[in-house]
Image (cartoon, rainbow, N blue to C red; front, top):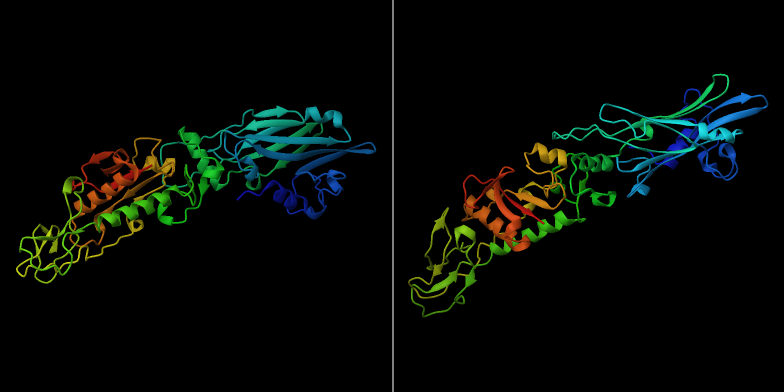
Length: 404
């Protein structure tokens, strides 16, 4: 994990790292801003190199390195390619040489592209990073982009002062920015800022390659799952009490309990078993009544509606939620702008739900109907894999996709 500029500076100046060819300040970090290597009221430099010319010591210092752009303030020196990397130096006792400071941002690893520009001269310079990470799809985290910053100053007589800032503790992407970089590499419409990145409260909502997810709306996946939970359970408890329990004098064919409203292609599905001598007048699934309940021979309404009181938590049946672009492509998705990559889609496989009296196809239709109610019919549909759309009662279906 990259250090912040302040933390790295404290580590550097205390002597934990000795750079080849550098004369480093030994002033404690707690005394920064009170004099010392940086001068009165100035922070210590990130790195420095020096030489003596006569009675004076000429000192090349890297004063500051910062990342600019959206959300960069919280990033320390982590970055993505749309953000600028600014380096600033100075030359003590020879300020007239500051315009001749030569800078280079050198890529580390094959995944990191050349900086733009590769080299630049001046007291303050601005670079942009580039990425060589592929977009073929994978199920592992991408490697971070990483650079080594070098400042040098040629002097008369062939001597050169040089300061190198190590990449492993400095200009290296943290996990949040590695994830954000994927969206830039893929060219997606959604390009998350740091405020869009979070650790999900429920691990099942993260089916990506990282410990964090990106959402267009913070907490949106969790809210969507809660709303689907509520609606599915309502559909499992929507039988209608047509005759109050204990009503007498009914004909044997009088409907005591009727199923709720029809559900997509599977029709009305009862969730009540007949009690005493009441009779199930509809189909049965696994020995459980799926239709209306009649008063039976004694003419008394003995059955209470929804007596199974089935209740499920869809969290147990989420097969996919957030997917980063690389993972989304590896899963076979045909679009780089899948709602999974923006943290606004859930795939739910209800076939293993322990709901008595329901076939896997009926359960699939119940979940799709719940999605229709929550997000609308165009945003809730049944699929097999990532690209095959099916009717909800198709035996080939393996999940319901619901998106915002």
